[in-house]
Image (tube, helix red, strand yellow):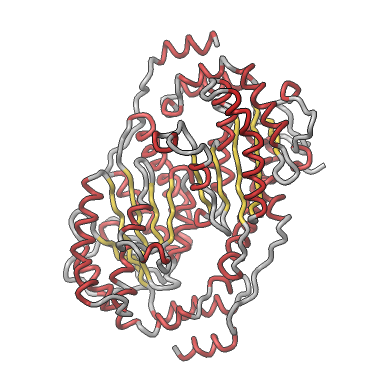
Length: 277
Length: 277
């Protein structure tokens, strides 16, 4: 089975059963993965150029949106650096969603999300997203239950609108074990070049893991739709999660059936003009 | 002399005298440059991480803005792909400025520029910029001479404000010969995977080269300030222009004297908390 197919969340799947150390759809080791990653990164960069070119030359309105969710230290930053970093920055629109600002809080929770959507021909990357509004918001009761409870359907309707507008959503939930998270946070404490990545609040969130599991389960159950399914990426092995997200993006782009757009000008006539110019 | 020093525009320098095929500050060949480029790209990525880290952990408000100007096919896109592409997308804010939209035209010409400025801790990349408002606008008389004529001082005042706010501007004017431009445009016409990059309007602009030379000369003369100097990058050899812009960014970042920010939390206490969590 392909990596993308193996990672798709299916109704009934349980968060508690996720083997965070597994490598679904890939039989090899870390050293086997390295050359595969290099080759697949090139494939991804090629497909991104096709997406961009089709918008420029043929007004193709389609786009891709990668949504990254996961607990602290699950490796979202590594995906951005290594997977997104392999494609041309010209075609990427990256946004990190942190604690909402006052201005953001004064608007509907989807306001800041809509403003950050990728333009046609681009790959958008959401490092956290509107799903925080049913994750941290739910765990900490930042709004009443009937308010966050209504958001699952609202999000589905919002994403339906995006998909109808030509956007392909690649929704990725990265899962690490509590042990692996401890190891990662300890590294941030031990290494002075990683202190800036450490946030004491991460431990507070860690202590809420059972509540987060519930919130993730509800999120996956209620917002993994046919048109915008979730993918669950076991992320204890970072080399695997990077390869997996690369494959998910490639699968999304390949489904768009892209090829080089035909010239929208008269090639012969332009050659003549250029020769004389 | 370092590459950065060799490229600095000095009052009195003439655009007509630029040797677009030269490699100022670098004595080697293309194959000599390859390992240097690899090593310097890593250095740049490291410095960008320091800039980002200091904002996150120490609220350092500084930022960098790379401004790329040059005729069509001068290689701006290659700089974005290869030089900017070497740093973490998380810390980059890329904007391409094309023909202004109706909304943009309804505002002051610096309106769209201000909206695209990099946040603190980021490297902004302007692929074309406010300088189009004294280049294409001047060449085609899109506004009366007294209007574009006033813009040099306006731009200097604007950039003074940016620099006072903690931004380092790296202004790069890329120059290719008319022969090299013809070769590049011909390649776009010959190669079906490059047709999307070709724009018949490029030939119209090419025919205005003498007028553009005048406009570039005035731009360099009037807006190369102590606080935001221009650098002239000979760009017939793409391997050189990439190395040169890499060096210009490194020089700007090194002048910021960045090091890993100290922890803004009690490391020992956090280690204890983590052990128990």
